[in-house]
Image 1 (cartoon, rainbow, N blue to C red):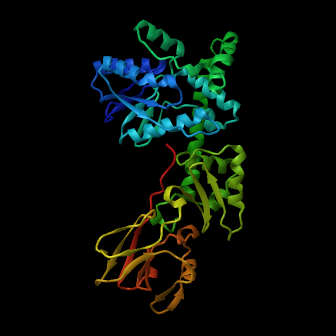
Image 2 (image 1 turned 135 degrees about the vertical axis):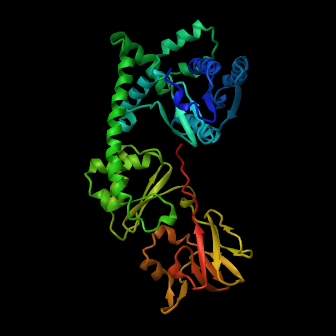
Image 3 (image 1 turned 90 degrees about the vertical axis):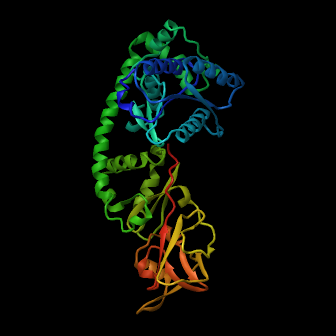
Length: 427
């Protein structure tokens, strides 16, 4: 097991406890470590997927083990959304539950080991993964408000089995692990035994290969950071709190560096597209200047506007609800699906309401007279995807102000808008 010292200041330690061999060994080792060191509180989480009848008995088994070790157990039941890959759907549900459990700075320990690392590398290689996928599993990575740590990546499955037998541990044998209809089970049961007959150190060498690939990925990430630093400058609308890049800066790079920079930029926001779907980037990049292309990804979308590409997710993917009246304007007003607004005015005002563009709006501009709102937004280069959700302040039928654009407001009032958060679907 790796050195646990870096995480001794975490508020809480959690362990993903399935009740199987790997997590049972890890739980026992963490409990032994905690008995001799000043550690954060140690708690176990058991995820019940509800995919097989045998699993109904597992929470009781896990509770028994945790009771013996004096460890608090949290049992979380999840809904697995059917899809092309049941394995992936179960994993997504599991990690959503982990994310919701972790508080700021908390650590989740998981029991993936060296053989898992080798299997992951081969599995992703067979799927045609790029370097980011082949680098396989890191020892640590962010997860929700906390972090995930895999302390057993240097330990083989055989070593875990030996430890469990030596300490008299009891664990669950998941019947689904023998079903070779699942790709990973097929690799584990039918492929790796043949590899180990010919190359006994196959798993160890493949895990080491994954480490080398991870080091190479680190160098590419450093290159991406430099490219993105330049492309991230020049945002004229920082109050949107949206990630965006200067498309000209990205397009000036070689195609390989474009993909590298975007993969790094997107990796914390969405599941990355495979090579077949990168045509969406080409379409976004090469669209006419006045076009409004969209590249839809797993957890959001990229749009192009005003010479930049913008990442949209969460509420930004939906049209805000209809406007509403505003009686108590001394306090901020929450806008369904669209953040909130507050009013700064020099005198009390009545009959106020918030609305959104319908077309044909006009605004009285001091010294310029009545001007078409669409033309005014064009002059200010407001991104097209923002315009339909910009809150408009009315008194009766009279348009007083456009949120966050002081140029488009009466002299005695300003409308301040806090846009919705760009919620991430990735954990």
